[in-house]
Length: 176
Image (cartoon, rainbow, N blue to C red; front, side, top):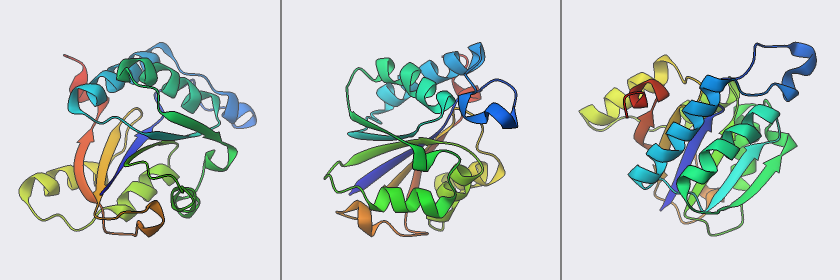
């Protein structure tokens, strides 16, 4: 089994097309990223490998999530994942040759949201339908989708085959 953790970068400074890649996190983003890291640890969502866009806001998101996990997974910062489309993201996942059971991908919308949606299978119960409905509505900053696949290799991950085991939005964690 493979577990894919899909994390959108946390809240960043206002959009600036000329300097988009260098946009940094705002205070709320730093807080949400740390809160999400704690939630990941508490729920046992610990990656063995991290693939992160090389943009400042994704790198900073990881820098605030990582200490909360209390583990040190191998991490790769990839230019190819900056503002990547869903097919590019899938190609990067397919290229992973390590046996890592759990992989964390940190990236950007709209590609990240489209990527997560394309992987989700048809829900089989009410909990999965609720999570899929939330994912279909919005993938906010610092939100995390947890997808489980019946696959031994990352290269075998296919569209519409991932069980959406969890979908966590930072607003849900504010009181914790």
